[in-house]
Length: 134
Image 1: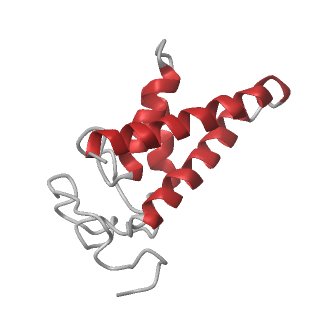
Image 2: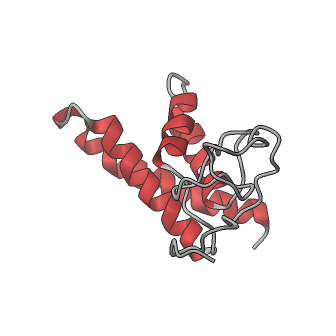
C-alpha cells in the first residue's frame, strides 16, 4: 500500500469512529473532550504499532482546535490525526512534545533550545514505544 493509501485508510477508520461517537454528543456536555481523548488513544495505538512514541494529548487537542469551525471539520480532524498516527506533522511545529514530555529532537521540552527549529524525527530518541528509557 502506498503512503497516501495508508494515510487515507487510517483516516477512513478514524472518520468511522468519530461518526460512531457522534451519536452521544447530545447526551453529554463534555463530548468534545471525550472525542479528543478517544482520538488521542487511537492515534497512539497506530503510533505504537508503527514503533513511534506516543504524542501528547494536547497535540490532538491542537489539531482538533484547528479543524473546529470548518464545514469539513470531521475530514480535517481525522486527516490531521491520521498524519499524527503515521509520524507526520499536519503542519510544521504541531508536535511540540511527545507524551513522555521529551522534545522530539532528543531533549526535554522545557530545556530544548532548538525546539522551534528541530526537524522532529520520530520516534522519541530517549524513550522506546513502551516508554522505557533507551
